[in-house]
Every structure is written in structure tokens, then in C-alpha cells.
Length: 104
Image 1 (cartoon, rainbow, N blue to C red):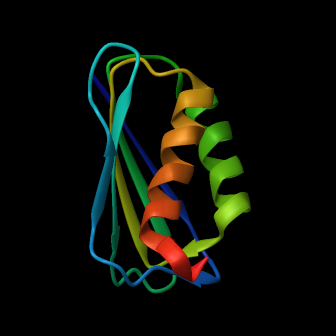
Image 2: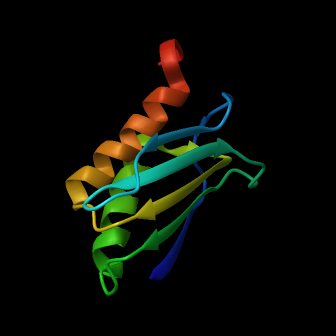
Image 3: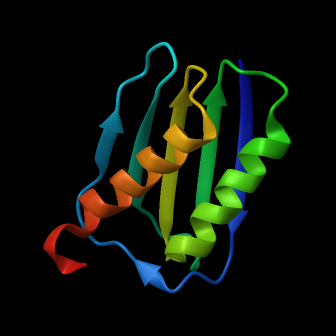
């Protein structure tokens, strides 16, 4: 297992809903926990992955996600079992959209 940590500053969108979990940890998939947190305007993402050595790809996917959503005061935890970048992006978007609900 590998643990990767990312922090993005100066987000503009705060989420106020209760924490949400989307996805299922399993072969080729992942689970995302997203929750509001007092992070001085930052968004943090912690990834626990079985696919060791893909840090550069994770970094690119996380940067793209942050550019798309610009989250602030949000903590995201990911448990991954080898999901592809497309599945990672899908699950992250699903988590945010679930938190936003009708407020989007």
C-alpha cells in the first residue's frame, strides 16, 4: 500500500452538507469519503492505494479535480484498489455532486 497526500489552497467553493461516502473498495474501484473541515480555505486529499508507483498520475488527476471544483475547507479520503484515472475522476465528481445535491 502507498499513501499519497495532496493539499490545494485558495479554493472558492465550500461544502456544508454531512460527510458522504461514494464507491466501493474492491478490485478496480475505490471509495471516496468527502467532508467539510476547517482547513483555512484548503482542500486536502489523502489517497491509500494498492497501486504503488503511480504518484505522478494521481497528482495529475488531483490537480484536474481541484481545477474543476475549486473546493475549500474540504477533506477527502480515498481508499483505492487499482481504479483507472477515469474511475477516480468519476468517483470524485460523484462525491462532490452528492454533497451539493440540489444546491448546484
